[in-house]
Image 1 (cartoon, helix red, strand yellow):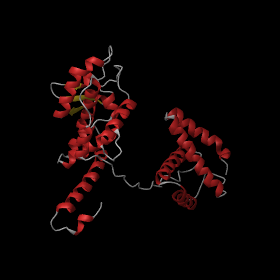
Image 2: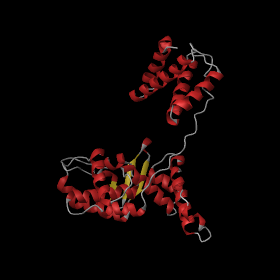
Image 3: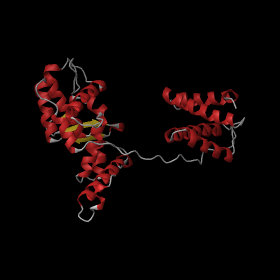
Image 4: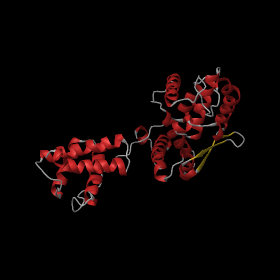
Length: 305
């Protein structure tokens, strides 16, 4: 079956996701590629129409498992479910044959985090001699202390910082306010930067807290480049990237007894299910500690989890 045989249906669907749902160009291309793969399967099976039967869907699912990665297979099924839902709503077909087909469960990837010692080594690798050194110290102390997203750190403005109350204040979706305490070490580094170093590099009218050498807001790329420099100095073998500090912040808080609802608030997660991924890391940590130190589990001390 050639895609051209149903070109009008596909064009109508792509127009729908482009103009009515206003999805991004990348998402539109993704839908188009997924449909191409589906039509490739139909062509191989000599199926010349869109009204496929249950047995043909089962064949398609088998083909997906063999030819696509789990992530790709899950995405393709979602694309087809939406495509056939559109055709059903437009009364081009009687029902959506993919409506009751569930996506395969994806194995949850265990987050990589830094240990408390690795975080300390990284932060201690930053010297404190120049204005930019002092900026870097404050920047990464705040990143870890507050569990910020990269966008929040580089977008942080002076108006977001309450030095008296030692808080960061953000406005989220729907003007929902999020308040994040700043730890004592991060606060000390931040005050030193704001009062002693930032005035020497700030450009006129710039309201952002963390600046590049030209006095403008530091970019994501600038942050990444700076981080790689200190990662190399710290001697860690782990791949260090900005979000790993957010992962580490949440995991370390839970390890030390913080309740998950509090961590959810600190991270700014709208759903607790998003925060629960960190409990998986914590369970792994608890098992490692248990089998390392429990006196009745000598045999288990060599286990790797």
